[in-house]
Length: 555
Image 1 (cartoon, rainbow, N blue to C red):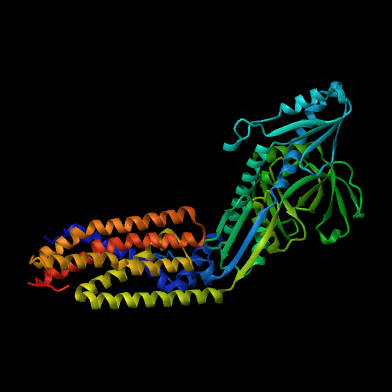
Image 2 (image 1 turned 30 degrees about the vertical axis):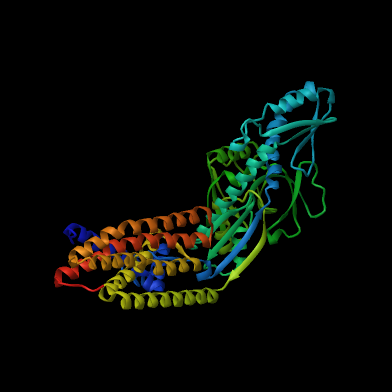
């Protein structure tokens, strides 16, 4: 018999109302967006009259989640970057050198004097005066080997040690290079994501492509160049002892030293000769914030983690009176004399900063340095006008599909078709409610998924209504015919939608970007379609039937 318990009816109605309430903010997109942005700004920088006014554009007691618009709908920037993973090999050897140097010096009576030679192939080459003791030197170097930490490197060491004449050669093993490449790209992904998130952009797409490439898509940003300025800077901060100063840009810095220009316009033409191996690096930073120096000028304050604070404190204690330089990428941004030990683990970087540049530098330092440089292979800016054209085209497609389905159902099934149409309208609202709830990004393929869902949504109702027609032909009463129609059509509805849902899951798992957007809307549409067909439409039919109690019905 036709019946739905009062508890189930309340549950269905509550689910529909909650879903439609979650979808409601999307009808007032710009107002709710300003409201959300104002709340975020108030939390970060405090209240202002303008922010309070923007916050009041939408009631706080209503849901404020929005469906985020993708790059093709909102406009923005697209970059395809290649990570120069080979640079990390040399950095690893530079970090390894001080420890190996100290170990070899302890064996000076056996292997003689040592001297590192320059190389461009990412290896560490050390000349030994007693070449006949090369075996002992290789044994010492191999003592620093560690197992490769990766699934593909099981049973391999991270370094390979060899010799050529009087030269000891240490380099990363092939297994370690593969593991290092993977870690470098993953680290680059995370740092790019942090940098983009710092500026408050909505729903960026940052994902790996192939072995060493990264796709970055950021909706709402002005241009590809703006995005490159944000993420393209390596922002590698290092602290170096100063060997000397010179005005000769061609000066020979000497072995294991580097020549770096000054970034301060007041020191134009001044070059610093620095020890190549830094005392402390930006990786030891725990925090960086825009600040002001003792003269009230913009600066950047920083704080080391415990390890960095210990190393920095030890060096400054042992080198009071020495000149110390802070180098950002290839330029010295600050150089000062160590007047007293700095053991507190914090300090300030002063220089020729503007308020904006100090803020930008603190963002880069907080996010961390990119482990390697990035080569941008492709860049594209999508204007908001093109995005609006896509929205308009998608809206027209939805309206046409919606109207065609509504007309077809009303003409084919009469009053029952109208019930199905009401459920279809609720279905679309529930889709947007779920998209808002999970914070999904809607793209043009996602709109295609919604259009496809509109066509598929009535399929379950068609199965039920046709089954009711068949039952009415066997001279059963209308109540029994409706009950059997829903009961016997259920298995076909579930089977058809489960197979489509599995396809959506596979598309989401194996696809990327727009394909995932299509899979999300298709999958959510299947869930809401089954819910509205089995529960909402049935509730409407039963409510009408209980009120009218017709002796006959026509489907």
